Image 1 (cartoon, rainbow, N blue to C red):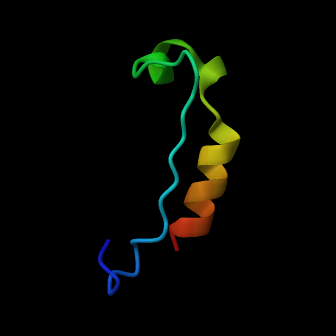
Image 2: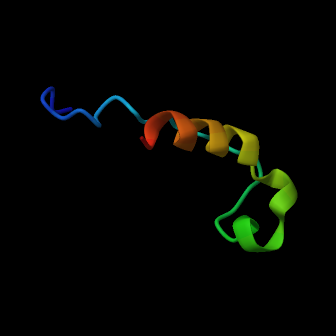
Amino acid sequence: MIKDNPYSDNKELMLIPDAVHVDLYDNLDVIPFDKLDEFFRKNLK
């Protein structure tokens, strides 16, 4: 991790059991949109 980078701390690993990459298109019920929204609102200023 680079200490001088202001974006090095705004990461969060999200493991979604039984989800696959195409679920964003095919199975929206497994995507935690509330968690993603919270992260983006906090870190995209």
